[in-house]
Image 1 (cartoon, rainbow, N blue to C red):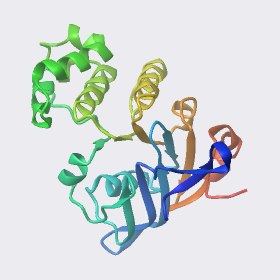
Image 2: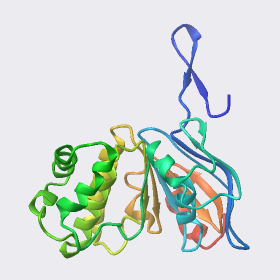
Image 3: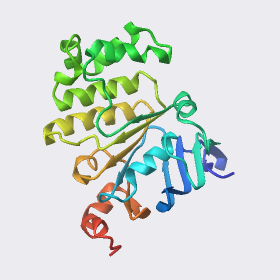
Image 4: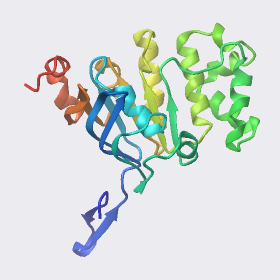
Length: 251
């Protein structure tokens, strides 16, 4: 069956392995008459951090938008846990466990931290549950609870965005340019949190232009150039090739 693999168990028996949590199969996407994805294949398994790398304009954000249902695919399939959800709207995909944290963090700057978290009670969790999860994972948010989100540092706003996303109890977390505008030390701490989130079984797909920011915690990496996956594999295997790949060469 497509999306299902087997491994040998005791006595030579094979046990089926679950399909990836998220899979893009031969996805093409466009803006008007301009095609930006030319048959992209990507998969993310439970507990796995996959880094999607590449230069500006490669189609990385479009790949996330297709995965979250916020941009339609021209062709190909979007699979979630082995189910074909191609064409599903963002709300249905969110209910199925897909959480997108877009570039720019997506917090409400004029609302307090607590009110930003309060808005996530639509997920069915109580305010106390959401705040407990957020403040235990990001203690600085407890200190900033009554402070307008827009007055916090960029790193703290990104923590709030992550906390809001975790309130949806996601199966798949899609992160777009987590490092944007942040100091390297702050980025390193945020990615430590991302690795911790993945360790609880969440599949994480991270779009990053700056490979060094994410490769240290990634389990798998793919390099997207001009709308095609030019190379993928273990992060350590790709480090030496990234400069050439970003310039559009496969050598």
